[in-house]
Length: 175
Image 1: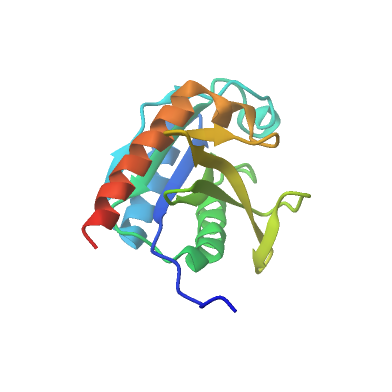
Image 2 (image 1 turned 90 degrees about the vertical axis):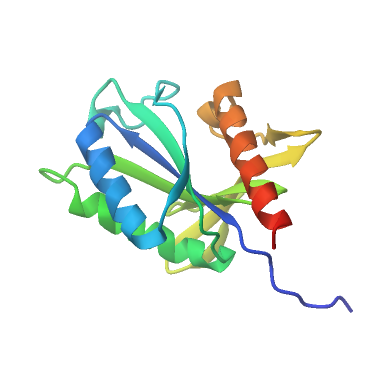
């Protein structure tokens, strides 16, 4: 019989999709109030690998990822997804979101994203929230799965998550 041990804390990573930089900044501020200092902000990247959000947001979308200095317990991710959905609603205008907020976590082995949508590769967590292992770490870099979103397969995104992983590795060495 295996010994049950708690999981190490993980790195909270949040992706934003937006057209309105003001909506992004408002969402970021609300998350900083809740989770503390940000230790990584990606460059603003064009979000152009899918037109999934076109009807709601229009064209010319951007994506930014950030991570927080304070580590979280991985079982918090379902509640964090509920919180980010509430922030999206709060910042909406005329029943349309102005920012899409995708929380997840990163550890040394994987990047996990939270979702409200079930699918064959997603595991139910709690309160209508599912988890998806989006990337796995192997051979000194993150790698994609067959279900990984096209933008998460790009070298720009992989580089971002590799950088955040290096920060996380340094943080966990000090524990």
